[in-house]
Amino acid sequence: MSLKRLVAVCIAIGSMVLMVIGCGSSGTKTVADVGDYEITTQEFSDFFQSAAYPFASAQNEFDKSREVLDSMIVNRLLVQAAYEKNIDKLEELNRVVLANKDKFLLDVLYMKHIADKAVVTDAELKDFYDKLAYKVRASHILVKDLDTAQALLERIQAGENFEKLAYDYSIDPSAKRNKGDLGYFLWGALVDEFQQVAFAMEPGEVSPPVESSFGYHIIKLVDRLPNDQRGEFESMKSDLKRQISGKKRLKLMQDYFAGIAEKYTITIDTTTCSYLLRKREFLYPPQLMETLPKGDFDVDQLDRNERELVLATWDGGQITIIEYLQKAKQIPNELKPRFDNHDSLAITIFELKKLEILTYEALREGLDKDPEYVRKVRLFKELSMADIMRNDSLPKPLPPDDGMLRQYYDEHTNEYMNPAKVHVYEILLSDELKAKQLKKELFSLNVFKEKATDLTERPGKRVLRGNLDYIERKYFPEIFDLARKTPVGKIGGPVVTMGKYSIFWVVDKVDEELKDYLDVKREIQSKLNSEQRNVAFQEWVKQRWADTDVDIYEDVLWSLVDMDKYSATDTAAGK
Picture (spheres, rainbow, N blue to C red):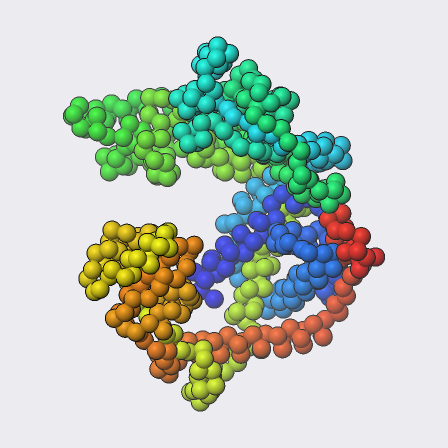
């Protein structure tokens, strides 16, 4: 295996492992034994929850659980074979694993400080459910400061129109469109500070200024109605739990990051900043200075020593000028802080270095010794080993010869057909009567093109004078079917498509035809290679499974099915 492919494989597997971020322990029961290896309920839940499947019934969930478990067993068989071949000793593999370890430190840090603390109680579930009894409709005016909000409230109380003030003064981007109207919404849809006030109000009431992370809101309750979409409590518990847990995690994360920012205070080296500003003044005339980004610097104008000047420090780390300028490339110039705005610069540097600071914090907490961290790193390595084993170490079947390729081509001609096509120009209109009348008036293709340039409502086609080029049935079924019956040089339609009325001029037709064998030979070869390798792999799995003591505990697997999501008839199969 090449290093390039190994890195790509490991990155993909790392992403798969990281999808289980935030999953708490599901217990330590064994759901399957594969030789001397135990697949625990925790390991199974990590994989199964990350897939986020929708299920129609408890049996459907169990069947999918069993499918996932079987794939995990196959992976474990590959891992065991990989250990036998000493794939775990590959230098390239271990180098890539080492380079990705920080991701799992952050994973465990997240679990410790956020996921494991986002516990949802039965009382919280019931309270959330009760608050879903009604939906409310509200409008709001959002402004930046309390003084402005208070002044607007006084104008409303004096009789001025709420909607007009929202249109004129609200900083909510949608206010110019909806005049502050948020429509109907349920509890949980908006930030807590807003909804706490809105759901306590009566229709027609206007609130005093309400502060949230967005600014200051003046809320007007427009209507309150029963929520006829609310189901039974038991059927909604799982969804409610996910919603509440998600909100708790978000709040915990925000608070945790705030604490980390306070703990690792970014100290700006003001001497370095002043040096950069003076150098800019020395390099550029005042007229040019006015046109340059205020928070950026041309790296080419810095020598080696200047590039390594320290721009900021914090407990456990620092950032140089060159590192900052390189990382800040991802920030639009208009958002980059000026070098003389030290507070904004510190905030920006914290955001740029946040992951490194969090990794340092995780190491200070000793999380590199945490059993969950060790487990995740091992899982990442073993999944990589399984992929190497399957793709590079199992015996490969002989490639198909020319006779096999030709035979497949002859027996599967339907797979290698160029579809029939029709070249048409089109005018798409909303008015059926107008489309019918226009069809009678068009007597040549040139006239048709001129009208299409002025009238067609198909996006992007006016500039092309209505030219749809050669269309296939799968993209334009209604037009295609009628165009195939319409003679070349004639108008067809109107036909309903996209909810509108299409008339078209048929320019040319191309019948379905078989692709040349040589043009598809490589495609057939790839297909047969893949099929043969899959068959060989399935044979290997079958033999390896037979040679290994594999025990599956379906009662444990059933215990992982969340029965609360299903009705009594749905869950009967698992009892």
